[in-house]
Length: 184
Figure (cartoon, rainbow, N blue to C red):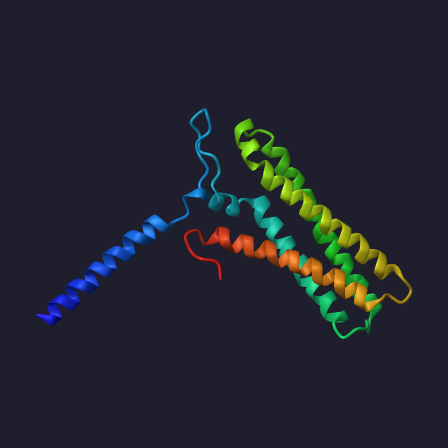
């Protein structure tokens, strides 16, 4: 009898967990239908888009080169200034490419309906503020590296800030890839 009760309780738990997993999925990730009946792109489709894939590749490269630059300055001095400048040049290249891809994406978004654009306005404003801050740190980092003997602490500070923001983008990307799962 105890074995049957245990088996029955296990089956009920399995059913409840399955049902709760279905209801726990994040339905906010799917966008509603357009007025003409077409489905808008959902987040999973967006991640498979060529522009997004290129953007993520450039972000990963920018993150890697920023980490290299930060590692070069973490001990309070820059051993190889030419290598640090080369790393910054690659970061700059990746950021420029990301900006170009973003402009192409935004040009395509002009075709969206006004209600959806209004809904996305707070997110867009936040992204613009983050982009402006990133550009300011890029400018300051470039200026610091142009000096004949760059200040390693200043370079490290700007690189650390940029690395933090680039990693934050990665965390957002991971959250979108795992709808219904908790972020780690």
